[in-house]
Image (cartoon, rainbow, N blue to C red; front, side, top):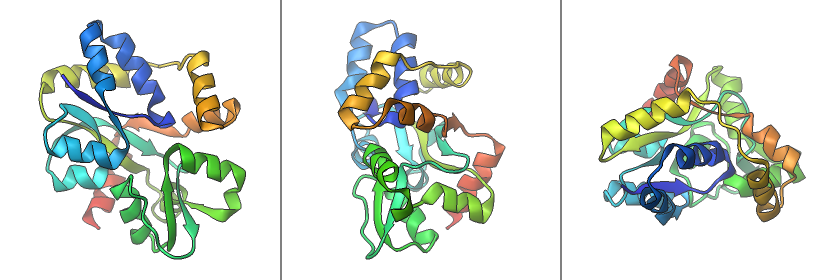
Length: 214
């Protein structure tokens, strides 16, 4: 089985969980094998070169994939999906964030992921948090990505069900590694992870449906 890994801080709890859940060492290695940024993972998934991954919400709709009730969700703010006001410039790493900026009528440079979090911490006044603006307008969570499956559906359904019912604690040493590599203070990483949710509940489904209609 090949799993597409997006190496962003917001998925650290899932990566910690999956390594504990999976006993087979060869399968663990396969998880690390396909590691990239969101838009490339989207392409690999559409080509069926990976079995499962967190796929951007907009691409999950276009491909009519089989998606489970897990994703990357912001109930209010997120701090890692931003627009710097100015001339419109897409972020090549995320189709959903680019579409969201256009839907909300925000012109500027779209920035996502850990680099966006670092920029926000340096100067929050210079950026628009797209999840916060979405919530301000619609009072609904925003679903940035969904967990979708090409093959081995039953296996991944069990895995996701277990993940959503498990309180995962990211080890301190791993948080420190992220802090050093991303040059983001440890306490800010901890605060950021509290903003990220993974269960697509009824409100999140409403938000997702509204966005995908657009």
